[in-house]
Amino acid sequence: MERGVDRGWHTGAQVYASVRGQVLIDLAIGEARPGVPMATSTIVEWASATKPIPCVGIGLLWERGLLDLDDPVHLHIPEFAAAGKHRVTIRHLLTHTGGLTSTIAGVAPPEEIVADICAAPLADGWTPGARCAYNSIALWIISELVARVSGRRFGEFVREEIFGPCRMDDCWIGMPPDVYREQQDRIAVIPGFSPSGTEAWVTWARPTGGAHGPIGQLGRFYEALLNRRLLSVPTMEAMTTRHLCGVEDEYLGETVDRGLGFMLGSSNPAHGYGAHASPRAFGHGGRTWSVGFADPPQDLAVAVYWNGMADAETHARRLPDLLNAIYLDLNSGCSVAGSG
Image 1: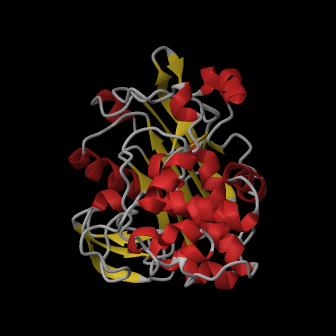
Image 2: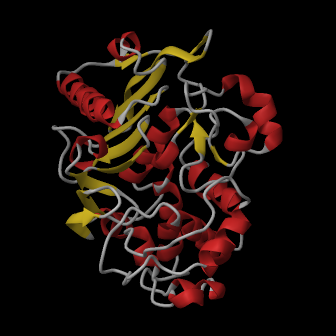
């Protein structure tokens, strides 16, 4: 991690790992913003490492009998059936096989984005379930499903049903503006990414990648999944089994294995968990600066954040290098902790 700072790949970083719930690595290095040291308590942006959280919300509602994975989405969001989307199911959204489109590319209110996706057609020639293409906007519909089926605002549901039980007190998907103003000095700013750390960006309740919090608290999310504090054994097995295996992702341009909301494996090392991870590892990365995952056979939870936008080639080296080093250190009995 320090070598990456020296090479200009990132200005700072946070690393967290636990085995059987015991924290063995919790450290921060470098700067969160110019002149401000990175701490383990610094609030950082998770980007697409956010995505499993709304999907676990679906899992919670499923095991409570409030929806079924093969329900057509329009059963719960009637307006979603517009423009020929009546065959799209919740399972299609979770496996990136739904082919949703949107006309909105920038920041907009969540209700406006949901309405736009509901009115839009599927991608040209798309048959739901027949093809796979990373479909980030599907998370807007997943979050809307969570809200409508639970009868609560999405952010409220996440804070109460997921972040609360996981002791993720410093985490939000859409930080309230008053909290942002109180906590602004704790929020990291990613060099070269102009929205990073701004009020408009941090307070945008974006289920596609808008979670903010110390990366160690994302590690707590995976600990809770490993010890079944969030979901039951049957639900976890269903969500982390291979629903897609070695399938060509038309957006990513690589083969992927997918569970329900989780990335299980990839032909690209920038989307994997290193050479020592078991085939049962599940999680998700975010852009080129974050990753969180669990490895059940080793009862291992890992979460990493780099404060810097590396290019794809660099990230495809630094991610597996770091994860391989974590596995090797833990296997040799290393215990590292630091308050940052």
